Image (cartoon, rainbow, N blue to C red; front, side):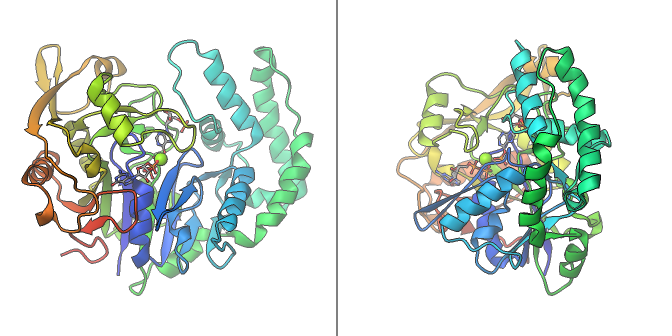
Length: 431
Ligand code: GDP
Ligand code: IMO
Ligand code: MG
């Protein structure tokens, strides 16, 4: 029995939700440890589509307990909405299968407002955030003026904390000609919602400790992707949390020695939504074709995702940054029918070849990908259940990726449907 972390290895939307759902069949507890409802995870189970943002993807499995850990930022209004929407889809949600950490931070309406205003006020260089208040909420956390879930259960304390936070933000709002925000407008609503959510709330590290035993499997579900990480990503075009595997321990409440296996989720090509450097972006026909075949539209904002070829330099870097043991390769079917498939194997920077993503924003924008061209395959891999049924060229592509990213591929996904998944090695009991 073991503890497994799942992280995205690119810029998010790698298909983490599908893989978490698939692996949840073996997990007793599924834990979200960072991010918030900026995430958008689509699950397809027997033609039924589930869209999740804040709830861990294990929630659609009847017997799986899910936990929103302390490292997540929670918009309680959105959470209630998501619970209602899933209940409408016949997913039973109660304190028997959902736990919320009492030390997670809250996203308030003022955070959403600030997120939107900041983006509007930036003429150029917009980050292209999801507009959900993620950044401002994490800023208040490290600024030591945040409001936590546990604060929802003492009205005086809640009011004091809200007032302190609103006082801080009103200085900037007024100075930039915006309307002053009043904590009184939110207090009662927040209090009422807190009461509704109360049965889910616990000191979650205690629960994790109970499950961190030989008889249980815990699955840690990362959101976003490695290059949206606040430390390791394409800063400042990143999200405001750490998305790499080490965050699982911090955002859930256990130490690094408890982790047995880390799975990186990797799309067979690359996408990015929002602004920022993207060395293999293809704005021509191939990029259009990838977007069309892969239905590359964001779940959260509906924005079109930028598309390009596989970047082995990036994924190799992600493997190193999270000490990834095995890769789940998704959306291989989207490459069906391409005559040629390109793989980026290095970058050209000022006439020098480099094999890593430089840290400087300027250099990240300047680098040019160096491609190796592979022959595409005829026919389709959709729904195939064994790798030896794949066309030879598809098998060659997989072997090439493994070699370039220096990590074995342990799972392959060939359609959005839960069952179209090929298991090569089990992360819960790897051989
Ligand atoms: P996440 O944010 O990493 O969970 O990924 P998203 O759910 O935002 O985006 C992945 C999209 O690809 C979803 O619409 C999935 O249903 C879909 N998807 C996942 N795996 C596959 C696959 O192997 N093939 C195809 N064609 N679609 C997939
Ligand atoms: P999942 O879990 C893709 C991107 C936004 C923006 C940047 C900052 O579905 O993979 P934020 O609202 O977090 O401050 O926005 O990060 N972003 C994502 N892109 N998938 C996600 O999540 C993302 N979450 C945030 O588009 O560029
Ligand atoms: Mg997504």
